[in-house]
Image 1 (tube, rainbow, N blue to C red):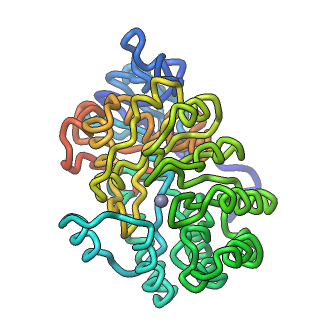
Image 2: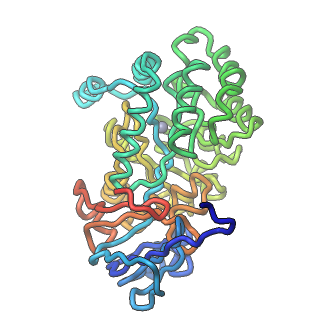
Image 3: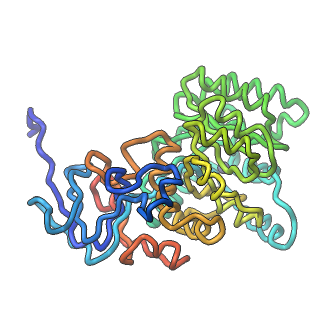
Length: 410
Ligand SMILES: [Zn+2]
């Protein structure tokens, strides 16, 4: 029954959208440069009021005013809701087992966060079956999808043996294209007395086994994890294997992570909580995105990253959840947007841009994070007339419908 020629896919128009966020630079200040965000009162979001979107197969074919929409096979009435691009969550750790409720409870009772708590999750993850890890992963991906996330990066990093890191990535690769090898999350507890031998493993046998399943390589560059020289060796070895770098940088203290990320053309420096002026300059003058993860500061009661300083310097900023069982157990991008607006002084427009187009930039993707013709038809409907409600109505489940690749999934 197969046809020798490509069959045309049905087209669908979504009409009666109160406000459509396209992130189309030609409709406003689409550039990530914040000075442009602020001048002239224009939005970076390429907003269209009383809008329609036409979807052809898995792609956006047309956007514009409802009254000008072309004829299509199917028609959906948005009922005056806002429509935004699906969130691009460029930083999560979802291949894990176990739970760290007690650690969170103790921390909220006054104990500080350190990199060491990761060992608890490593022990639980090693003990878990493949089925258990996959069930956990799909549960949190589904939870994120219900909240509007249509692309999610995720990492290994709770196995820390050749076998356990490889299976984490193999499982992750079944569910997302954005898979990151993080054998260098912490020094494996099996190598506490010989960190150099662990770095040799991460850059040798473990890398060889993991590289086929991953697109990215990451290092936790921090006191108690890996120093600048170790991180450089690990990322450089990954690059030689065809993996592109991203870095956990400057989260708990000042350090070399951001400069290293820029030096190696990493797609993203993640956390960026403790930055010098030189770190900000380096980010602003590079293609490395500063990915801010306010769920981590919220959940560890830590100082917020200074988003204003980064934006005003002209750095590209992404906003992600860092969803993980230890330091940020939220899969909610809307929650992170509310934190970024309330506590990190981002405007509602900047925060939404960073959680969509910014996340796409942090994954070096041009086919997601916006709703211009040719992009994947990944979008979320809000039970609200405007995206501003994401921060204006914190904690309210406003995402009422989610489409991915042109198909309604929520
Ligand atoms: Zn992380």
